[in-house]
Amino acid sequence: METLVKGYRNFLVEADRARYVALAEGQAPHSLVIGCSDSRIIPEAIFGAGPGELFVLRNVGNLCRVDDLAVTSAVEYAVGHLKVRHAVILAHGDCGAVKARRSFDEVHEESLRQWLGEEGGGGCGLEEAIKDWGKCQLERLESLPAVKTALARGDLETGLFYFDLETLRLDRYADGLWKPVV
Ligand SMILES: [Zn+2]
Image (cartoon, helix red, strand yellow):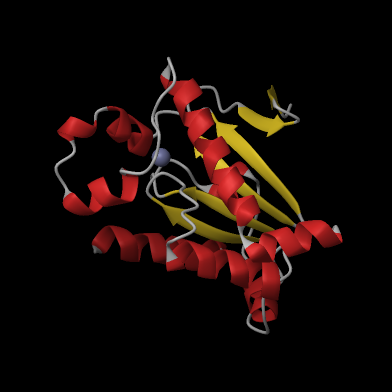
């Protein structure tokens, strides 16, 4: 616990208090990000965002399972209620969830087997598999009614990114191609 409390003390010193006072009135994030629970993948850090800017859902493997209430409620709230303008999947290199799916015989935790069991982990290389995995999540995201409605109205843009840990490269998937954003 000491590590967390020490971290909080540092946060207090550095926090933009005026910003938090304003945010206490409500939030109007510009984007929904569905990312992985992986401790190395911090959407706010990668996208240079502060408090109030990103509505983030993180789970094991950045899944957008349409049969999971944690996923659908977050998407519906962000898109339907908060009216975010962007909804994106953030996939990442060395994703343990994809690796686990590719070595499924070695996964013994029952909840993890259920969570990952319906995912595909195929593809020759790991990066390709992770990127394909992300595409599947994007398709699911775009199939949700709230997202469909917002897309049809032109109120929302959906997207898919791949963050490479080692090089910090961020690839974006658009028009059937992966390209580095910078
Ligand atoms: Zn991951």
